[in-house]
Image (cartoon, rainbow, N blue to C red; front, side):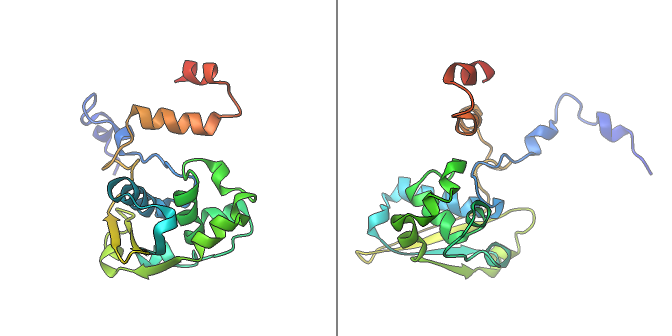
Length: 188
């Protein structure tokens, strides 16, 4: 039966738009938590790409199935390639769709990072799907250190929402080259 009261329940107090995720990165949505984990390892632990011996991505089975293409051949295959997403996060800007171009996917430094990527399924993370898309990374550093981080949600989800600056930044990234900065700021 239809429940018309649902339309007005919590009217003016609860906002459905707060339950929407904003896809921050230009890759597969299931990769976003591990992209954030990589970014946090870099900012919190000072991980530098040239110091990484290997990068192990940790996630649910669904995250890893059919997504270990080490030599993607199209923009779309790069967006669904876990090794490429690691390289784009470490070497490029994962928010910028231009980081997933045919020119970048053949760069020697990108190929070298992709070759360092492995993946491991964590059954505990499988249990969080589909409510959350968790993921993590474990870097083995050339000096013997291990740096790891696992996140249950990515930035842009209702649990970790983007602030106004984050949304404006995404807008600028997507419109650069199509709108001058004056128009971008006017729209913002």
